[in-house]
Length: 124
Image (tube, rainbow, N blue to C red; front, top):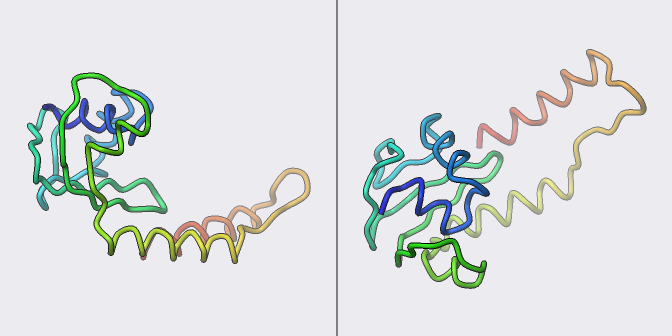
């Protein structure tokens, strides 16, 4: 099955065009190599999906010809325990340190502070 279609069926992206865009920008890799939208996936392949600030490392478990309910989509893959732990730790850190809040229109200083905040979490 095509990588873009599988990512859409597994509900990582809302549309196939968003999946294609993510693949073309290098946010998806299959078995350690940069993927193309038409890359054939098969059970056992390791897929890394980067959706900043999170990164999902998953193993393909099944295929589906249609985009079904979320419970059905979760049967198509298995997330590695290390990936899940890393995502949960990052979520807790983001929750503990929320981004700076401004009143009204942000100033240049506010924008720079926010960009530093985002850059810090994307580097890890």
